[in-house]
Image (cartoon, rainbow, N blue to C red):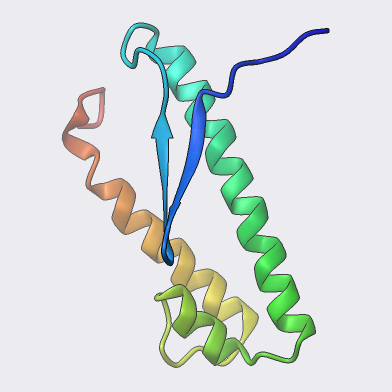
Length: 103
């Protein structure tokens, strides 16, 4: 039976969750990227399911945006999506100095 060693592991502490990359980081940057991308996709899916559950429970978009920490006064799904995308964009701008053609 094929088993794949878990390379990214969630660590829960109170209300915070951290992901810890196991193994030797930096040895294979492409593999590191692949593993982190898979973990990111899993987190995004879980977030989408949690949002879907909140909407099904009747939680207003204003509250969802507030809980996500991206929009205090969102009135619609689109406003939350736009605020979440802007938040992700801000995060990515922190990595501009990491090198590459458009650094």
